[in-house]
Length: 549
Image 1 (cartoon, helix red, strand yellow):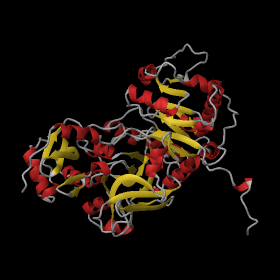
Image 2: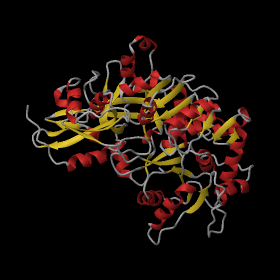
Image 3: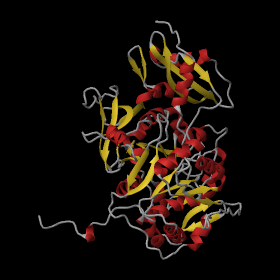
Image 4: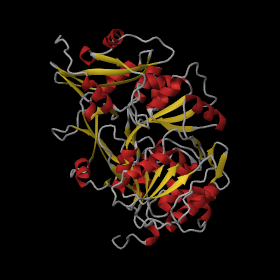
């Protein structure tokens, strides 16, 4: 068989961009996008993306150049997930809630040549650009106007209005296929919950694998109705912009949302699927006098370990919750809590506990393990032994942009990608995340999982949200410090009452020694609690003097 080798006919580079081309044929007249009173079909979306890609190329953007987008979940944001790579450029979606200084740093670090800006973020981006050093080339700006009919003009020699670019573009444009499947397709910056953001680069191949893997693992059927509660700027919406094209789904776009908006959209459009961080589940579960859903709705959650109590309340409303685990560096969810049919016989509380685990590798991930960093060996599968979660597979990033040291540090010579997350492996082979490595509390030589303490706090009927971090202690080194917010329709328990509640439900050494009530916990735009902010607040309290007993 040595004479059988790859040929052009069987060696087309893998890319998720081709999903749109197919959708325009298979689902031509089906609704692709809904936003307020605006609707598009898949044939229209394909044509608009071709025209937009054509215009991007006409602006002098070359293959490999970075094109940035600062926009919420509106139709333009969805279209740019196809149009930018169709032009050969690298898509860089930026968190809309970052400040001007941070955005300025990201734009310069990425070398962005062109920026698509939602009209509500105009002043933010102009301020970011004003912070560029005097000799730095300023990217072109294209403004996206939705609903206000405002035409924003510029002194540049080109018309910088989004819709005008589409109208001027060539619908017969031959989109730029990647030279190889390893060609970079997107650049995403990490959320920065634990450190300075890093620029994660993914290839066409990696995103093709992640997209297909996500559809298979979540069992997404053809033509679902998908509600965009997960920001598309967060790891490209866990690959579902491309995934919805693959299955001809309807994308229900939202500029912003709250629990009332979500519930209204679920019923108005017959939503079948949605994604969101645990904060979204908590939002839905804590609606006063909630109504049962008119039909089951699948919701995929990740980003932080969801408390079992929140899962239980969410599913009692009619949501079917699936739980997974991934990072910006994997382009989506590479581990999922694959549900076993026999678990349906367990009591609801036990089902919620099992579902709170991250699970096993998806079919597209080659290997997953939990490794003891001192010995380099796999930890025992006892659900107790802590180690770092490591992954290996085609969905793992190419590396960090302009950061070979950072790339080598997490993608080591032994072939593993080191996630920085601390977890345990259960006897049945399922992974459970216990903490970020920086969030583990070391008290008197004991490693405490802040996630476990938070899970107990979430079971308190008055607590809305909870986060636990380390506070310096004169004797123990560190002790758990809990920050909590309360439900609006409940009385607020005292610090002593919360401590006693925890003491009755966990080992005494794990009980928070400090409890601080706040109106709201600091979060990233994707719902992750910013523990580094809370750690600084706990540190500012000074060292505690907890009794040795």
